[in-house]
Amino acid sequence: MAGRSPFESSFEQLPETLPIFPLSGVLLLPGGKLPLNIFEPRYLAMVFDALAGSRLIGMVQPVQPGGFAGDGLPTPDGRPPVHRIGCAGRIVSFSETEDGRLLLALSGVCRFEIVRELEPAQGGYRRVSSVFSAFRADLDGPPDDKVELDRERLMAGLAAFFRGRNLSTDWEAVKKAADANLVTSLSMILPFGPAEKQALLEAADTAARAKLLIAFLEMNAFAPDSETPPKRAN
Image (cartoon, rainbow, N blue to C red; front, side, top):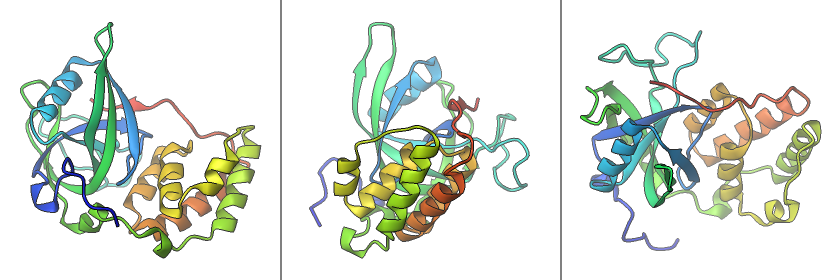
């Protein structure tokens, strides 16, 4: 396994307090890359504060209407609850646009569990007290040759899923992708619903996520497209 980058946090450096960016239907996983388009003043403030500190932002999903009790934690000011499990991403690049937006790239670092929501930061964005201990293994990631993946079944499910939605992809790139990277990338980019995205996030490890991914592909192969525009909680 390659040595750790000098820009990456060790487990001991992961902060207890995290800014969170609630976004429905958007998934960040450890080792994955997520582009973001930031334009609201409170989230611009969040990015500037993160750049001055740990460079970490917690990606979480709002609890959907009708979700099970206990899915989310109550907030100090009545804001929409979010799921307890999210993923911290490190800002690895950003650029400014002439119309006042920031284009970010987040690199998934480690999942976390929300202990409680704190009062909003001065800039207006939400913050939580978090713990990473249950997901320490995320920092290392599985060696690719140890990922349990039924690749033939995955490819068959993926082909049926794409045919059912008249989608296309670079199949040669898919075939060449390493198992762990393929599972992470597909979990993040495929148009599954928020509940399915959350289930993929909370899967115990990459092997469990791979099995869940295959099941979702097979269940959704001929179903109507469940993709909806990302919705942000307040």
